[in-house]
Length: 283
Image (cartoon, rainbow, N blue to C red; front, side, top):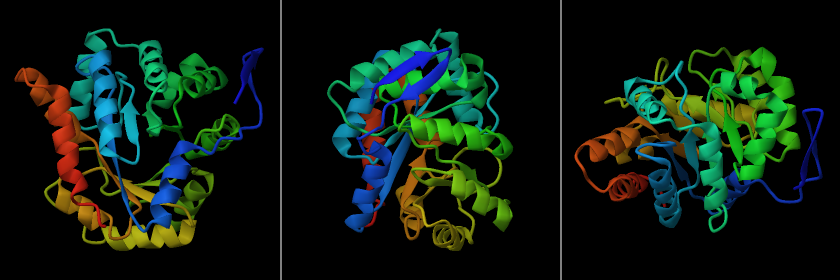
């Protein structure tokens, strides 16, 4: 895909490459398998180690990685991810460094990557300019938890024009009509939040979770991936009874922070944790 900037607007040539996120989920579906999508905060403990973590997760065969871009005013993030953001920002990690790292990573790896960040960062840079930069770096999709549904259509259109996907979040509290609208605008997959509230590990997941995911998959006709609250292989197994994949964020970030504080090999700890969670995937 060729990207050009003209008066701040993206002009995208027709994208002949299938989006990595969509291709990966389609391959899983065809094989009757489910996926794991770990979340990693970029820049913790540093940019170089983040790249090494991505390389290790690519070797493990995860479906994709959510790369969290630190920001100071997080909304849905719990204390663990907030602490990782604070650590990265205190060390001066910036978006341009993260994208430069992704570009280096792309020279030798095809692991699908989603950037998860605040819509305020996108607006500050400029929607067209930001989408162009992440596409050029090799990001495959954006997750914008604070993107209002009412403002999502033009953003979704621009993201699609750049060959990226835009999974939108569906809450358990969302009424059916709102779920339908969110699913229609989502691309790649629909991101179902297992629990209301903030991110973080939970001892138990809601008893109606599996049924809710089943209903959403039927209504949307799209892959559904579940995040928030998942932190064990058993919970991955439960979620993937119906979901196409499971996202683990806080549990992995906590282990990374603890490993750094203990002077352990952060990459090895992260890979070991993800390997453990992958045992919960059916098949």
